[in-house]
Image 1 (cartoon, one colour):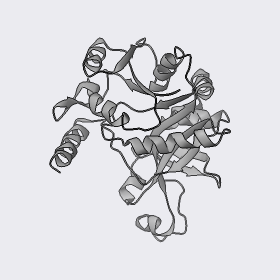
Image 2: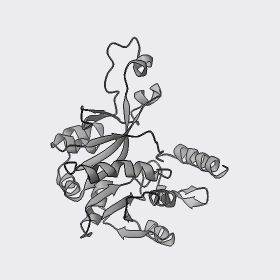
Image 3: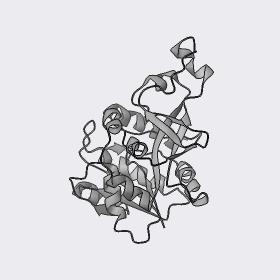
Length: 251
């Protein structure tokens, strides 16, 4: 069985109550849930939350919801907590609850390698950066990878550094730079291994939990996608999400 698990935490620092924030006439979390349902490979979707308000709302739009302890540190820990109760789980997909416009095709692109290459334990996505502002932005995580498309490093800094470019603005003219799309697909055992590991120094420094895997020798397959999504982290993002939704609804 392939499970898609959406972690949803009420106490967001930059946008409190984020999963229940409205985009059009539906809460953000419902938009995410309905987008994930468009995946052709996920067998069942579960929302993992530590909050009764989210539990009630998600149940009202027909989602399967599991209430998790409040003291879990990360969304991955929340997903692992739910996965342990799934006796038939083979593959777990971690879909962030703040991705209202994520496409089912993107999710399936990340799942597919685990179905056809038995040696892959973890897979994620990347997209070519076309805007130099995204290269500069620490909010946009960059990824480098080897000749077999396994991740070498993730960073908030511009990587790779294009030393011979005449100026920073010309980097994208001379080298392809990729941003990480934060969707993860795990084999069950890989998820359990990852969430049992202590935080490493690189993870603490960059505030990127995927670095914990690399620090401990886990390999992450990275698949290029032409598709994109938009995560809601701030009130400004929420306003933009409403604008995107209105433009989609008017088509």
